[in-house]
Length: 117
Length: 113
Image 1: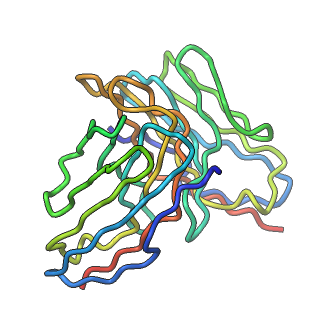
Image 2: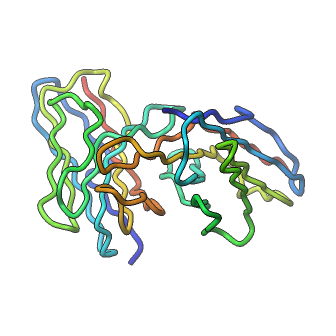
C-alpha cells in the first residue's frame, strides 16, 4: 500500500465554522506533512510531524491546528478561517524526516480542496 | 528560501528533449524533483543527495552540482505523458535539528503531438 488518503476531497465552510481535514497512510512512514497550495503556485510547507511530534511549524496562524493521533494519522483542525485560506491542502508522508533527518521521498495525497465563504 | 527554477514554461513536440534548471543561494543537502498534473497531487520523480546518491525513475535523469547549489532535470525523448508542472524542491539545514524542503515556482511543460 503506497497511498496517502485524504478526506474530504472538497470542503466548503463559512468563516465561523469548525471543520477538520484528515490524512492517513499505512506505509510505516514516521514523518507526515501538511502543505498548502494555491492555484498555479508551489506547495508551501505548513507543519511537519516526526515520530508523532510536531517538529516544524512554519509560523502558521493559530486558526490552523494540526494533530497527529498516531503514526498513521494526521489531522488539520480548522476554525475561524478567512476567505484567503481557500486552497488545496496536501498531506504528505516520508519514511523519515524532521528532527535532524533528511526529508526523503515525499508521497502526497490527492488533497482536500477548501473553499471558505 | 525558495529556489529559482527556469524556464517558467516550455513547449515541446513529442520526442524532443528538455532541461529544467533549479538553483539555490543556500547550501543544500538534497534536491527533489516532482511532477504535478492539473488537478492531481505532486508525484515524486527524483531525489539527489549531497555526496552523490540518487534515487528516481529510470527514464528521467538529473544532476546536482553541490559547489554551485544547482540541479538540472533532463527529459529526453519526451512523451505526451510528460506534460505537467515540474517542481524542484531544495532541502537545507534550517537550524536546531531541522532540515526544510522548499519548492520552486515550477516549470510548466507541455508536450504536443
